[in-house]
Each structure stands twice: as C-alpha cells, then as structure tokens.
Image (cartoon, rainbow, N blue to C red):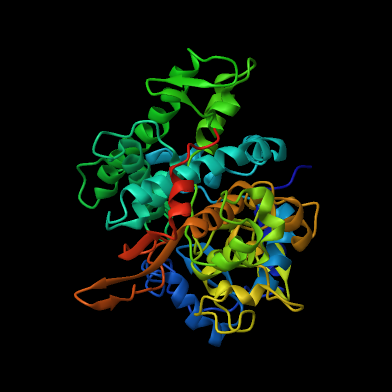
Length: 494
C-alpha cells in the first residue's frame, strides 16, 4: 500500500530537520548580528570595506562572516588561514560568484577572473600560464619596458606617471601624433569600470538577480543604463586591439608583423594567434587572457650598476644576480597590492576550526589587510625591501597578492609548495614588475618634485576600490647620466 500524502509530508519534514540539525552542529564564523531578510547590508560600506573588516578583526578574529540577504560572506584576515582554506582545500574553493552586473549585463563573463570553475577556466589558464609561452614573451616584455623608458624620456613632465606606465604595459599600435593613445585610454576606462563592477556589494542586482529583468525606464533601474554604457566600452576594448593584430597578421612575413611604420614586434596575442588550428572558441580565450598588466617602480640603482654595469640595460636573465631589486619588486607587490581582495565560492559544505561554511558562501581573503598585518610584516606602512633579505626574510607577499588555490595567478603551480613555486615559475605579472623596476632604475633618477622651492611629497592613502590605483602625483624623472640617456635612445632589440 502506497504512502499517504501526510506520510510523504512527514518524511520530507523529517529529512529537512535532520539535514538542518546536521548543518547546525557547527555555527558559522562569528560576525555582526544580521537583520531579518536583508542581513548585514547596512553594516558593510561599499567604500573601502576591507578597512571595516580590519576593524572587525579585533572583535571577531581572523575568520569572520556576515550575510547580505541570504548569502553568507566569509572574510579571511590572515595569510596562514587563507592558505589553509583556499590553498589546501582548493578543490572546493575554486569557483567564482556569478556577478549578474559584471558578467551578464556588461559582458565580462568570458574574462579569466570571473570565469566559473570548469573546462573554460582551465583552457584560459593553460594558455596564459604556459611556461614556454611566458619564456618566449620575456624579450617582448623587455622591449615593452624599453619603449616605456623612451616615452618617459621624451615626456618627463606629463603630470601623470600612470599614463606612461599604462602605455608601456599595453604596447598599443595606435599612438597618435600628439602622443595620446586611444587604445590606452580605452583600456584604462574598461579597467576602471571593471573595478567598479566587482566591488563589494556595488550593485543590488548581484544579490537579487531577478532585478536584471527590470526595464531601464523603471525607477531605481539606473544600473541598466550603466550596464549598457559599460558594455559598449568593454566591446570596443576587447575587439579593437584584437582585430588590429589579426589584420596585421594577414600580411605578415614569417615570424614578424608588418605595419605602416615598418616591422612591429610580436605580441602576446599574436604569438597565440600564430597557429593554424584555431577555433572561434580559441580566439575568444586568447582575446580575454591578453587583457591587462600592472607595474610600479621605486629605487635600487647601486646593485644594478655593480652587476649589470652602464653599457647595457638589465634583462630578466639578470634576475638571480639582483637580490635587492628582487626584494624591491616583492615590496612593491606588498606595499600597494593591485587587488585588495578576491571572492571565491564554496562549492560544497565545509567546516574549518569548528566554523561551518555552507555551500555557496562567498569566501574572500582580505588581501590588503593580510599584506599590512603587523604580525607578519614589521612596520607594514613603510616601504622596506630589506624585509625580504637576510637569513629570516618576511613572508613572500606574492603567495597572497597573486591569489590562492586554483584561482592563483597563472603559472603559480599548485603541485609545488608556495615558496618553491615562486622560485620555479616567473609568471607574466611578476616578471613585468621586476624588469620594469630594474630597467627604470638603471637609467633614471626619480626624486620628489620641487614646486616654488618646496618639495612635494606624494600623499599615499589606502585604495578606494577592489582594483587599486595610485592617485596621480608629480615627481622628477631625469636620466642618471649621458650614458644612461644613450641606452634609452637605443633601438629596442625586437
């Protein structure tokens, strides 16, 4: 005889209660008390939330949590805890949240940082993380920075050093007569907009996905207009440079690209495209993984002079012989991290140190806080490359700033221990920071700007968005010598 409707209902209720009791054996990580339905939406500011999490750490500890509507948010405030959860348990913490605004409404769903965990992400990482490809790209990186040096020499008083940095990194082929570069401007707009899109709680539609269907004209639906404008920027920023490279390759000679100015060096994208078996999907992956880099510089010229001399520029081959410049590049990564936090998604229920983390929770390492933690770094507010030298160097910041687990910056191999993988793999971003610092310091003296007889000290503040940018500042940049200026004027090797 079959079960009655009442018996089915009682069985279902019993199963629910058992599951609830099993899940409730452990409490979630501590945090502020939520309000009904909306959770802690009023407790977490959209402006610099990582600083709020630092303040909460004294009360709730290194592992804390709160809710936004029904979504559990878990914050990690220590490097050791982040490694224990996100590295050692990477199999269940490697997904990304589905950000409706950024992914669905604007179109960043194909970008590597926002890809859901799966085959497409593995293909992206296989491409951009190829050691062979990265090694082949080293001369291109050196060429890019050489162009950057020439640009700074020709325009030392541009007023915004960030403009030179972006131009040096992106290596656009469309520079105009006045020195302005439309692709640089376009890429910068897209990156600024991306930073806004992935900010903590930036758009309500990410927490209430059904709002995506609200029409643009409806009161309170201004995010639809924003999405439309940002989508247009993104489409142009990804398609325009990609199309340019393909057009140039249509008339190439073996191994080189030809443009109106003569011979152009190969780029990351052209290296990938130079294959006969590409599918439309392959092209999409290449387009998205060749999107952006970051760099900044300080000083350490004595070591470069002693090791490299003044007859040539440093190269990546000199890296092992320049320990102070290596330490400097690490301190750059720590002192002003490019990304203040990232978000992972728990792919199944987990319990850590007695705290229950339910499936679907957003788990975020507070990267800025970890890299400024006095327990890990002495005088963290100071810029001190020496902290990474000697017999007892402080924790390598690249194990934090380049990500955790299977979302780690490409080519940081998961099969190796953190310090070993840093020695064995020089990935694109890390190599760019090192070589740009070394080459810049070899030829330029960088000092405070003097205005009306007064030294201007740049004001350094915590970042205001998830992708950090230094506030534009003035500084004095001059060639170190006539020999240094001659090196800058030399034609790049590629």
